[in-house]
Length: 125
Image (cartoon, rainbow, N blue to C red):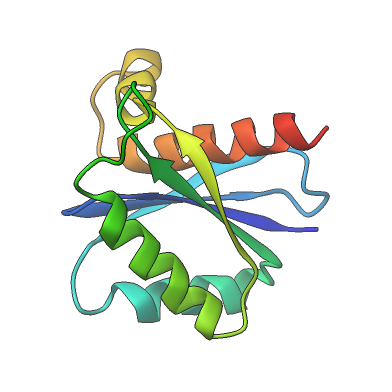
């Protein structure tokens, strides 16, 4: 099963996906969070035959929702309305973790999405 990971941010959205076997999470791209976001995500899903989407559920360390969580849920709901299987997966500081691993690059948000997806895969095993 091929999966997609999303690190949703107010300015940028990181995208990752698994290999064909659904075993490895790979950073794919960073998209601007603008009016074209949904179309680009849907195109990626179709082109890559994605079967499940894992969206990072952003909360504070105390478990309370971050201000961005409402937008994340709305985005996930929109994808679900298109008949896609979407799951929210807890994530904390994945963007900072990605930056610590690779330094600051234009792909940090995609790497954060890969970290979310990798965490999801590990929990499923």
